[in-house]
Image (tube, rainbow, N blue to C red; front, side):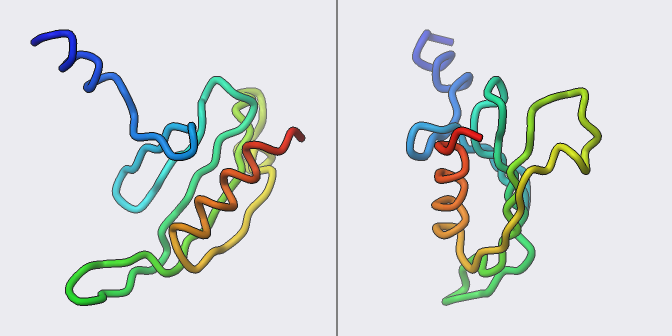
Length: 98
C-alpha cells in the first residue's frame, strides 16, 4: 500500500469541515474530540425513480462527556424532512458554542 492509500483509508468524508460517517440508517457528524457531535437517524425513506431518499430524519446533539448518562448526554433533538435540512441544523448546532 502506498501513502496515498493509507491517507484515504484513515480519512473521513467531510461536510463543511466536519467529519461525516454513515452506518446503515445512522449518521454521525462532527469531531468526537469536541464537546458535542450530532447523531442523525433516518426514520423513513421514499423511493423516487428507484432511489431511496431520506424524508424523515431525527437529529440529536450529543455531549461527548463520557460521565453522562445517555439520556442526559442528548442536549437537543429535532426532526427534519431531508438530509440537507438535517445537516444544515447539525452545522448550526456544532458552530454554536453552548
